[in-house]
Image (cartoon, rainbow, N blue to C red; front, side, top):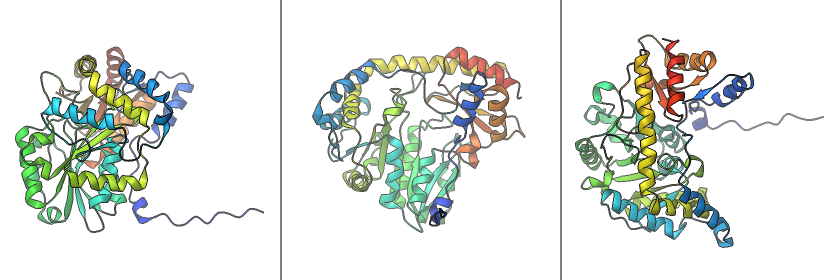
Length: 392
């Protein structure tokens, strides 16, 4: 006779977790495809484009070296650290010590989530954009803190209105998360706003966590800055970068954190207890990409720009009012008044075979919008727009 396992009660922090966006969509998508439905997936920001050939070549070469199969640990691949430092200098004019002010991470998601463990505990607050990337909230909750979501609204250009934050929230805040170019709204932050954010964090002793994962996917002459281009930012900020979107390397899970020596040391200490570093051949491939794929990036951005233009034109033609963003791989599309975003996305999938991200899945502040990821060719984006028109 078997006895039922008496599992321990789940931790309180676990029960506070929201469901991760689109968690059930892969299963529904498989079921629809098994029935012969032509599904167009514009939900997750995971483009169908290939990574740079230099990444593949460098990975293969590194895998053949036995020493590259050893633990990476927190030092990681020295050439990768040096390549990051050189890239930051070329791209932003920012000098960073490759060993004290840079740290390899297993994709920016991992680093962002773990950073909260360094600074946040019970009674502490973090200021998070709503809608926003879920690790901002997840890291806060796991660390025992309380996220304070701030709605990103069109009337504020989808910027967090720093001067309107409640005084008691600011007093308890340890981290301020900013992400520009922004996921999901595709908004960009003017340099004077970033200057105000740095001053705000300095005044209130808050760490500015700047998620710059989309710094290289920009159009129409726009060049997103690093937070470290703002004077004094190195004293109050940490910046996260990822190779996922820029280089179509989402599954490779590789990125980096940059900042002052003390904040980087704190993150490295936390990570030493939870991981043994990213696979060294992946770090070697990332180093090769940063050193050699500069010209390749411009061609990749052209592909996203063509998709943006096709999707914006197609959505406008069928009745959606959507802006043409200057950065990211997303469109943030307002819904007609009275249409709930989750109900709309569910109908889009089940009735039209189109996966989109409901705005509310990324936070209550996203209600009234849905996100389109430019992850399919232009003709498929046009087809998706025609199908979604039926739901208006």
